[in-house]
Amino acid sequence: MKKILFLAIMFVAIALQAQDKTVTTTLSVAGKTGAEISLTFAQISGVTDLVLTPTTATITGFTMEISISGSVKSYNAANKSFTREMKAAVSQLQAGDYLILKNINYSESSKSKTMPDMKIKIIAG
Image 1 (cartoon, rainbow, N blue to C red):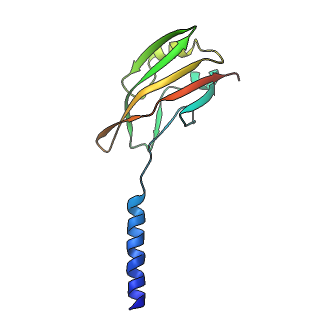
Image 2 (cartoon, rainbow, N blue to C red; image 1 turned 60 degrees about the vertical axis):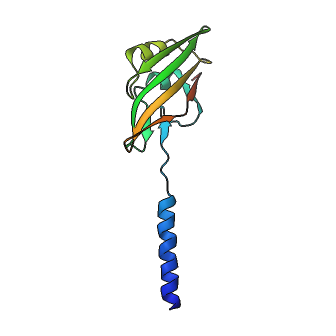
Image 3 (cartoon, helix red, strand yellow; image 1 turned 180 degrees about the vertical axis):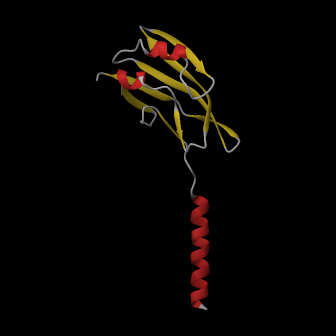
């Protein structure tokens, strides 16, 4: 009887543990994650797409805000890819400049969601 009770408790514990596992969707740019990251000009210039993990999530659009010489400009993308205009703006960045990815909208399990903003500092390198 004790063995059956022990097995029942273990089964319930395993089932509850499996339910508690939630998958966190993570944004990465040039392999880096976080609310504020640093990339060299070469790293940011090589970025063509934003990446979400797990790969079952799909980016449906985002805004890139960039400040150059005190002038702030915003650019919108309708998917995970940087637009031609975004790439042209990134090409003007120098060490010490920032760009912010905002309104990062994505779809996961048929639900629309938004990622937190990501601030990217351009560093020498």
